[in-house]
Image (cartoon, rainbow, N blue to C red; front, side, top):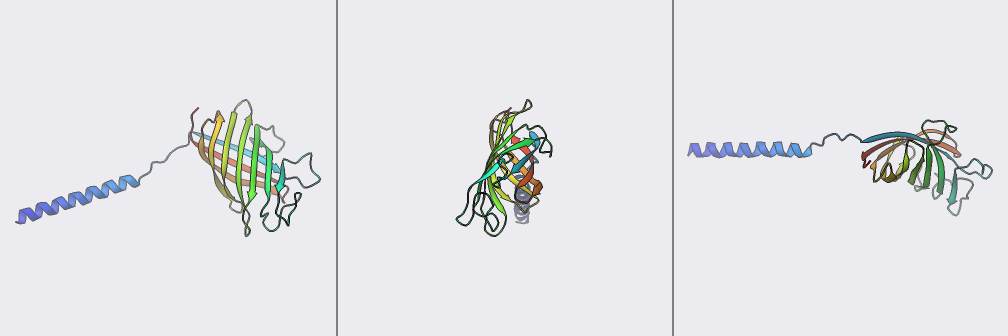
Length: 189
C-alpha cells in the first residue's frame, strides 16, 4: 500500500512539474528583430489664409463654430486636414525631399489634443521606390506615439510594422515637423 501511494505521489509530482514547464514555455516570446529600419522627417505647413505658396496642408473640414483658415477651439476638435508634406532624411525643411507624406489627420477629442492619422509615404528617390501606408491614433501630448504600418508597394510590398512618431519641432499651429522611426517586421523584398 505504501509503495502504491509513493508511486501515485511521484506520478502527481511529475505531471505538475511538466505542466509548469510547458506553461512557462508558452509564455515565452522570442524577441523579433525588424527586417528593415528607416528614419524620415516630414514637414507640415498649415494654410492660414496668407501662405498659399508655402502651405503643404489645408483644413478641408471644420466644425460649425470653426473656419478653414484657423484651427477650431478647443483642442482643434472637428478639424479635418489633408496634407502633401515633403519627406526628408534629416530635420532640415530645405533638404532635398525623398518623397511626399500624403494623407489626412482628424482631430477627434474634445478634452485634449489627439488626432487620427491615415497617410502614405510616397517615395521618389533613387534609394526607395513605392509607398508605405500608415494608420492610427496620435495622442499629440505624448513624447512618442506608435502607429501601424499597414502595407506598402514597390520596395515595401506588403510591409507591416510600427512607426514611432515624435514631434521634432513646431511653430504654433502653422508648422510642425515629425520624426518617424519606422521598424518593418514583414518585408517581402
